[in-house]
Image (cartoon, rainbow, N blue to C red; front, side):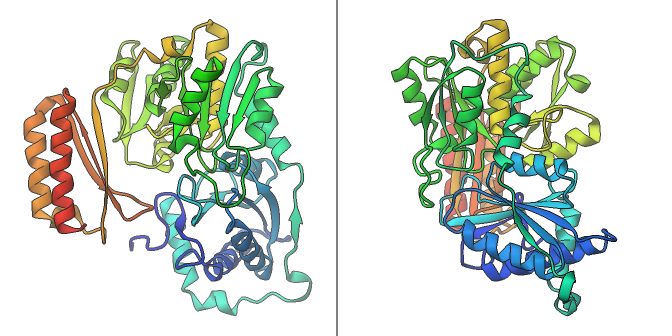
Length: 453
């Protein structure tokens, strides 16, 4: 089986209107989706949901995808700007045959991407994405030309945000409210800009909204989950109990406690995992994390009889392991948290509501809840590269990695990998002392720059 060429760890992604993220590719991908579904659906036209974030280029790609789907005899249901988890939820809830989300998540507005969901609301597995790539090159796709009444239709779904809001609120205890809570929510001018503040208000919170004026070009720009310092500063200035920062497609969040201290995905996994474990509700006594997660997460779970298993970077791989092992909690340090009993993918709003529910039930501030996880010093470096040359073929880089591992021995970790969505090498070094790990990370970074930088 060949490697995927088009799909990365989270769909297709690139600079909008440049290869591969062109309207021509979107149109052909829409045709491929429709063609593939026609082979599985009989007696009716396939039904495909299309959602998007707030990027200027979403209009272009939405139109092209819709044209491709309808030209292949499928119906396109356009839900407009909506968080990625909302598209996943509605795909399953509306009995659609597939879902498409147009978003480049945390990337700058010039980029865009396309993520695909199966009819059950889960992201397509690698094998299905590989089959889709092969179909794009198949002459049979060009020959497939429905005519007359076999051509599909396009529809606008006007109540999608309301349906998702009802779903998201199910993550908060029905018998409780957020009355008395002051919450700062930074939506990053992204897909959650309307629904997130509305849900928090409906649950009784006093909401201080940030990043809720998208103009097509300001998504993620100095705001949201990529820049939680602004949300944290507003928490301190306004005396809020908690801050929530969402990324561009609102499938992840970073929190801040009442002191304006940032609380990342590992800490959220720790406090949610401990809460579920102590209530006897953590399936398999296990949390699924990635190789990037801090060693402090393992310690926090061990103290209450739980454990951590690690998978490769990417929330899709977290979900795959959770489903394979029958587990219900997993996520990433970056803020993707999957509560499988509430949804099929990471959901920043649902994650925030789950944490707020624990705060409301226990009466504890977020600072006290997050203190359950001791944090091991960790350094992360992103190195721009010309190409993703296999690390095993770079002896200078391998030597730097081996030196770092020998220095840390059992007291730390070294992880070097390429980004699945950008031409970057990511270096993570974790250990007992900040100065030491910073130097080790810098040495590895220098080796990468001298070879593939």
